[in-house]
Amino acid sequence: MFRRCLRLCDFSVLLATFEPFELYGSKDTGICEMVVNNKKNSLNLLDRSFFSSLLKATNYLSSELNGVARVGILTSKEGTPFSAGLDLKQLQELVKGPSSSATTGEKAVNSFGMPAMQFQRQHAEIRLFQSSVSSLARCSIPIICAIDGYCIGGATSIITACDFRYATEKAFFSVKEAQVGLAADLGVLQRLPRIVGEGRARELVYTARSFNGTEAKEMGLVEEVFESREKMIEAVRKSATLIASNSPLAVQGSKLLMNRQTEPDVERGLEYTASWSAGNVACDDVLEAAAAFAKKSPPLFENYVVNTSSTLK
Image 1 (cartoon, rainbow, N blue to C red):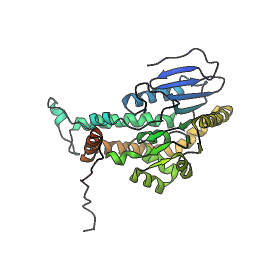
Image 2: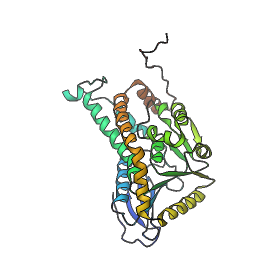
Image 3: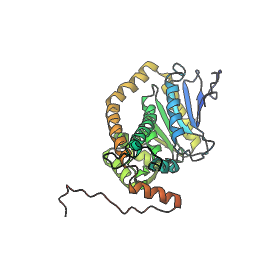
Image 4: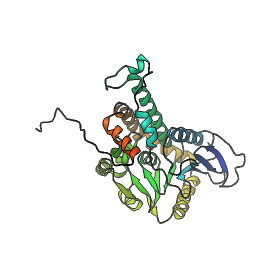
């Protein structure tokens, strides 16, 4: 759904809607707020519709709002979490194999031991999700992320694709994919080490542990932490106002040049990651995690990969 507002005279004007994203702003401020307001899902779970709309919203910022918006703010509606992560119901659909009515091509098995066309579909879908997240980094204007409440799993890929981040003390983070049998594949593995350091990133990814906004600031994941959402939004708007007051040519040029140092490596990593994930998304661990989620019980991971090249006996 797309809707454009003709009035651009005050900051509260609704410029466009790409459900669940609502874009507010004006030419007077140079600031555009992308507010996640999922009326059907209060946890702002990540699904196909979310990623499709995120890509449309960021492209709109870079094109249609060129000359209106000089800086963007990504946040969730007051009273709702940033995002509780991937919609595991859609994950269950993704890992399903071909039906009994599948064509010969769909039943053909590739080198991963899975139906070849199923692999291609899953690879294409992962790449689409990756492109949606990376659109925040590609967006011509800086994007500041303001995080309150849950920021779990794929949501950590979204925030690390933004230029910088603010959070509340009660923000709740987790790079959770290892708990559901997945390797994070939307960009956090590529971008998080540059933000918090290699060792800390590995610790967060391998343990999948949770941490709050205060610890996020201590490790450098967020620049500032606030006791309330109101104070966070006030501060992020002040930072956005400072950015908008500077030369847009210089600011956008600086983002482009800094991205030039990092994003090519990120893109190569994402392509490799998509191939790995598409080949492993139907593995026993993912199926176990999906089944455990349906039963509302903890998963039990019993199988493991044997490293045949290891010298350990």
